[in-house]
Length: 267
Image (cartoon, rainbow, N blue to C red; front, side, top):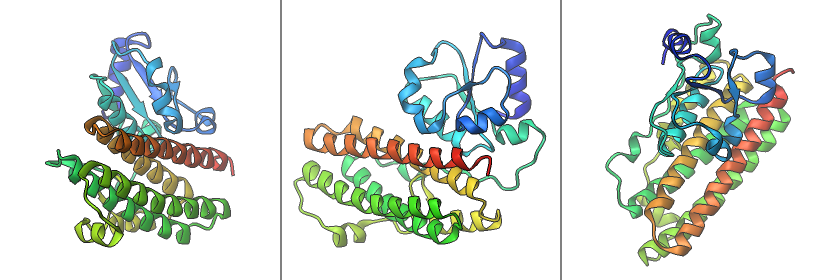
């Protein structure tokens, strides 16, 4: 939804007829938010879904759009039908114009119904995301951010190993990193966007830390969404346990990134 469309919905339905959700961190919310908006940070979003009224339309928003788009996708995947995100976020609400907002898509999922294909794709995206975090660690000047990105690089390597484990359980085939890399799609990260294009976009924005963290949170949310989809489609108990582990890992990454973002708001 555009800002104008969001304002029209608020005017027509009122606060009792819709749910306006601010998915930023508490410090961002306290610094200024849309009146009547409910705070549900993306870093805790999945654990709060059962508190929402499914009978009302929901509109999510963040600073510029990336986090709210991912939150809307999660809501749709969980069965919420009347869901939107506000394009441009609170910056657009306040009259600021964003230049070339980063948009992530899940187009790489299209046509991939087989769990074996999805596992191969997930390994590829974990590999690309590790490359992205390596570059973000080098790009960031913040010591704490560098440490977090380094830990995420290590985590992505661990996820690749877990996905190999799941692949073996699902297919009964033996596989290793070298074999999987030969099957992989090169140069993409979680969310289905190019590593190079994402890094170039951030460089053009001046690589502000809050923008790097916003994009990182969107990537992690899209990964969380992918693993929940995969868990629903696999029957093998051992493989499901792997995906349960990966889902909890992605939730922990979101919390880590969100906490860092919130801590940097007033600095």
